[in-house]
Length: 142
Image 1: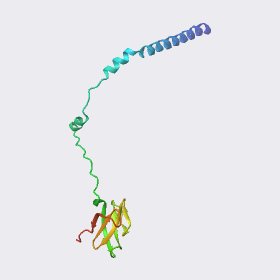
Image 2: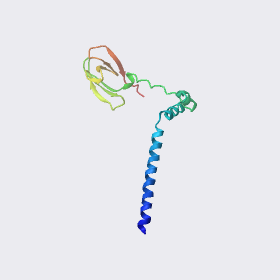
Image 3: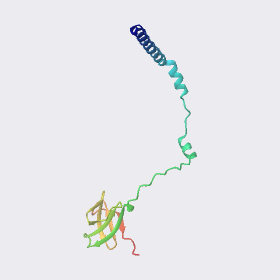
Image 4: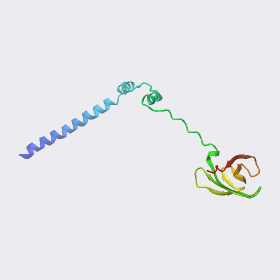
């Protein structure tokens, strides 16, 4: 008796799965036609938006580009030891880093050489005997 009920139930289940699969594939194939995609693309056309106007309306302030630091602001003279026309040394901090000692003729930074050290100031330039590019002075005593 169980085989009389089991066989038709299994057959019904298999044919139901076949019908479900066939309907699913037919719906998938019909959804990939050209007409629906054109309608969908036309429905997605959006108006152009002025981004800066939206940002201003939301309270954003325009960002101004930071100016590059001047050459003199990169260096801070912290000490000078004068030793004559071609001698001497200076204690110079470059780009906010700890100060280092430099002798006359030493390269302080990219393309700048310590040309001379006199009293409370030093001269920097492209070459030891070239024209001076920058003059650094010790800050005034407090």
